[in-house]
Image (tube, rainbow, N blue to C red; front, side, top):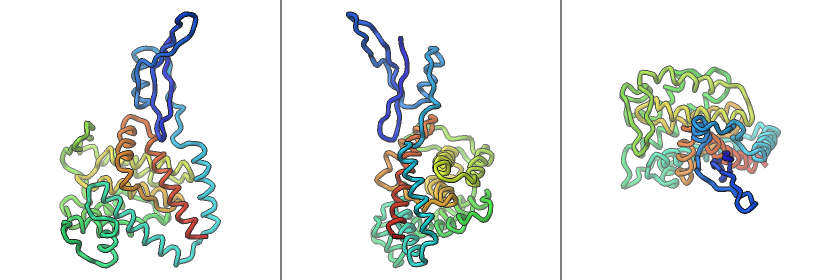
Length: 305
């Protein structure tokens, strides 16, 4: 008899096609095939008739979810934080996220150099003009993001277009704030991006998720989903990754979470998580974001206490 079972591997699940056999009166199991995602396992079962339920997988471990809820509740009990603490945390987030988000995309500025560019206006020798502009533009985009995160008004398509315009300001002005009008490709990826004509319609679910009022763990799941959806649609010629990470934060901040940084040293696992999400498996991405949310909560709690 053959069946499919789920296995856990850190932040993600994988699936095994297992066959039970009896040899010399003893039941033995043999793994016949591996599936990296539930969608691939489910696709296999459609042609074989093997029963499989992939809906039971958890996006976020129960223990981690409980911890995040508890830490957010504690932070809420300490709010409002003093203006001095808020200012220090805000400045740290601006530099840290600008450095990490740009570095994920290949910007060569170090964390220290990013600080010098943003705080001292210093030009770093050996680094391009665009790399400097990516830093200053991203910091400006964070300022706009914070205004959008106050939760008092609905996030619209124009808001997101304006946010993207800031990201590409002076770098690619002809593309800044405009959906792509051509078919583009992701180097090194087999993913075929949607036709550019479908972009406006495909972005509508992202805007709906940005205005979702759910809180707590559901907000983290929503942020992971809209993050992936933005990357999947790839609505702009450039700046999609930076925008997706900003929109992820916009969703989290409007739900009461502190701003969260996806770090440069997570780049490989981050891209792998996005690839798994392409196949319908969001656990890796949700767990990655959740652990970074916990770091942000810890930072804010330490500062507040």
